[in-house]
Image 1 (cartoon, rainbow, N blue to C red):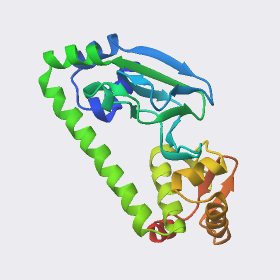
Image 2: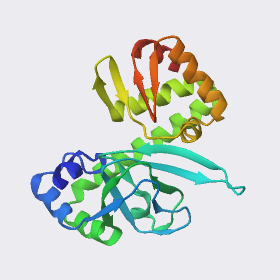
Image 3: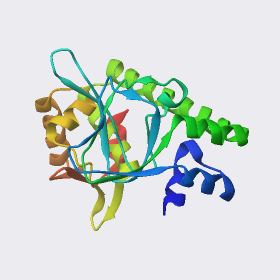
Length: 225
């Protein structure tokens, strides 16, 4: 199971069996209950984590205590990879939003592994470039998209990564509270709830507890643009 989790992670995708097995052997399991922080902004960091099961929210806190939710990560996704190349203080806080299992990898262990497999460094560079592109898209959305458009785009992104087939659509169990979903979109809870209610009234989706069922992807995609 651990081998498949590592093999599916973008950072290590395409590795041969020997390289993947060697990597799994130097990784350590970690388990988190919902609401437990994996690390806090400002903590020293020298390891990355691959999510095996569950979900975590990644965010930052403003000086007045307000939280800005940057992303939600789930199975096969990686957290904390920047500290592998530039060990130092964590720039974000990672908190489990459901029961979560992870695999951790120390900076020194990865460097030893990479020295023996320099071709794997290309995967690392590609993954970091994808992360930068994703960040640029988020910044662009905040500048150019209205709140309903950002809500639609966030739901489509969550559906792509966490969606499961339901009898009448696609179930997206995001495990976020209304406030957390609003933070992810970068708007007030009231404005986001209004957009969700409008989408539901139009028959594009159905609202459920910490989840939505998407009923009409085409109209949601059109609204996201």
